[in-house]
Length: 143
Image (cartoon, rainbow, N blue to C red; front, side, top):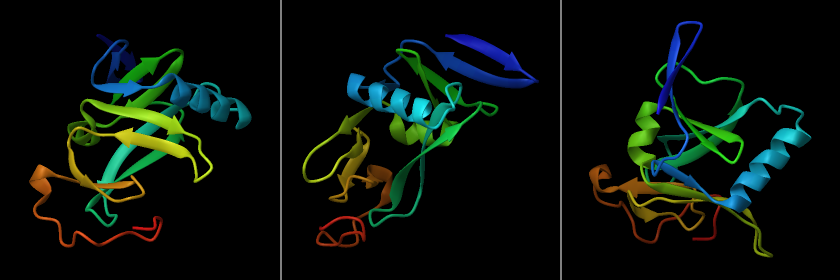
């Protein structure tokens, strides 16, 4: 692990880490998206925010550089940025890209989630309390 100082912003770079695993198919898609958008030096920010039918939801966005206290995970030439709060929820998660006839996209296999919505974009942790409804769903999935 090394510390990078850039304009007085301190970030931690993790080259090999069990913190977050990214599959080869996800790395390939991220690399292709960076190329298509002509932003080869950007990183993919992966974050968790409140919302979704299960209480928390995943988000992703491209950013030029990390912010103070961000974790940077480098995998096969691709960088992912995770803020400290999101890292608490994503510790040990695997990011994959699934392409199927029923729909494709990034999928996060999160060992911290005790339940998830059928779409896989929303989840609940053990600290998140009881599920409000086991038959509920969100607007982006058929559950």
